[in-house]
Image (cartoon, rainbow, N blue to C red; front, side):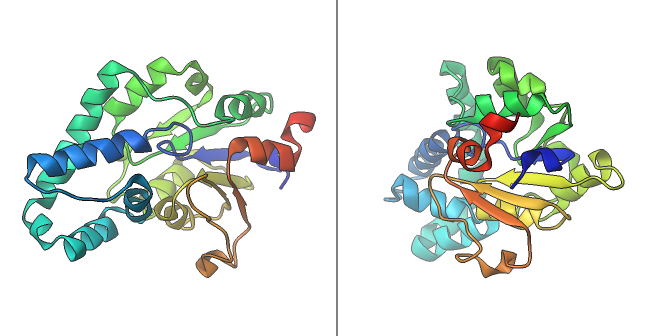
Length: 230
């Protein structure tokens, strides 16, 4: 993979650039407790299901805990409210290697953008706290499109708005739902996750795509020679 070969860069946000997933996990447990549900999922279990998208997450939750079916909407609503409230006490850190990678990409002077399921209000708080996010030239938030990932609405919107004729696009994701959404556009797919093995061997549905997997942006920079070339 040669980073300098690409013209437009799309990035997911939560779990890829910034370590928000543990906050969402704790918010989920608290929301369940408020509805008198005790869900004994550890973080890896929660992450495995949540990375599939809300619909599959909901099906798995109700399958294991049928009583959750009556209060799914409330759980998701409260999870987000609790998560937002937690940001008052401090914004989570960037994922390892993110700041250096984005700074080095900026020297290419090519469009960098975020394509996220998160609403604009929550995103603004994160943007204010992490100066490196000023390097992004566009943000596609939940208000911009109809259906969330794993549907491809978000990336199709970004592609139509910010790609240009002849541009080579590369997208970075940390979850299966994100990769499935990214697969809706003609882009090189890069999975970056320390929590899941997101390879073409693991997910043959991506076998026909130009696809790369790394456990962190630090590993990506080392293997791609980003530190030397930019």
